[in-house]
Image (cartoon, rainbow, N blue to C red; front, side, top):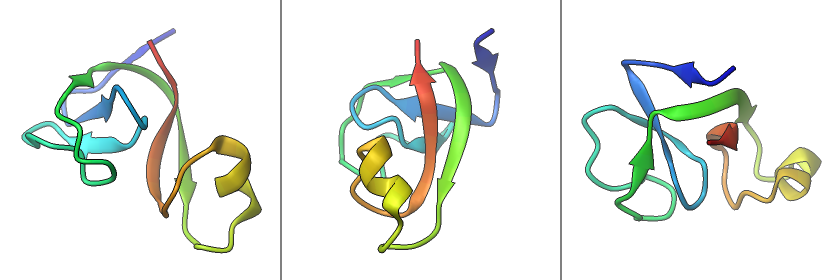
Length: 67
């Protein structure tokens, strides 16, 4: 089931979790967001192998699935 969070939204391009008030994504600079996302992954290290598997470029909070 999709998570509908009032506090956060996910970037439609890179899936980074952003504050509801953000106008641009902190990770990629894109300005299209969705409140329909599912799952959360937290990358805390630049050397994380999971970062490469998930396909993200930098540490942060990311949605696993954007609907």
